[in-house]
Amino acid sequence: MAIRSILTIPDPRLRLVSEPVAPGEDVRALVDDMFETMYDAPGIGLAAVQIGVLKRVVTVDLAKKDEPHQPQVFINPEIITRSDGLSTYEEGCLSIPDVHEDVDRPAVTRVRYADLDGKTHEIDAEGLLATCLQHEIDHLNGVLFIDHISKLKRDRIVKKFTKAAKRAAAE
Ligand code: NI
Image (cartoon, rainbow, N blue to C red; front, side, top):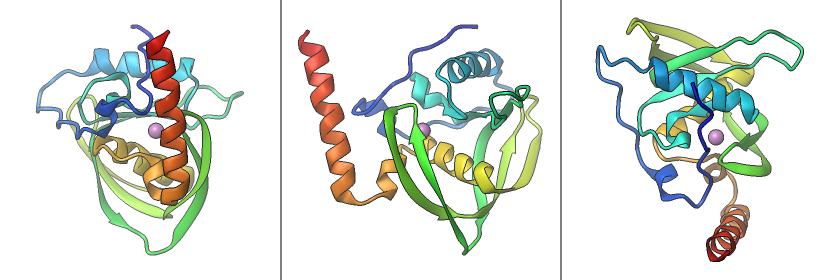
């Protein structure tokens, strides 16, 4: 297990579409690294692309600080249905540190995914889990939560991170 570095915008890899995990492919080592990285950050969700691995793997843990870990793994997750009703959460992302913005998303979603043994499951996610899964599945398609806010705000955020990256590269 290892803590991996988390890509931040404007890293172009965050805009790529991740590949499905093949049947029988073992992603346990990747998942271990993802949990270790996510807990260290700390964050409640992570997509493999955020550590530079372009595979459709998502880790989630919505346990509160004083609760025991509740690790959840979603392999090749896809949204089957979305509710018309929306809910709004203030979202953040480990790849866009220190930025938080309200995002509207369908309040309930049915998600199909495989577990580490390759078994398929479907869940009806609501509340924070629904938002978190939609945010992470977006990552697998190269979409970031700032794509769901106004262009004006998004441009301002991207500009700030692009400047900082240039400054860091020049040092
Ligand atoms: Ni994110």
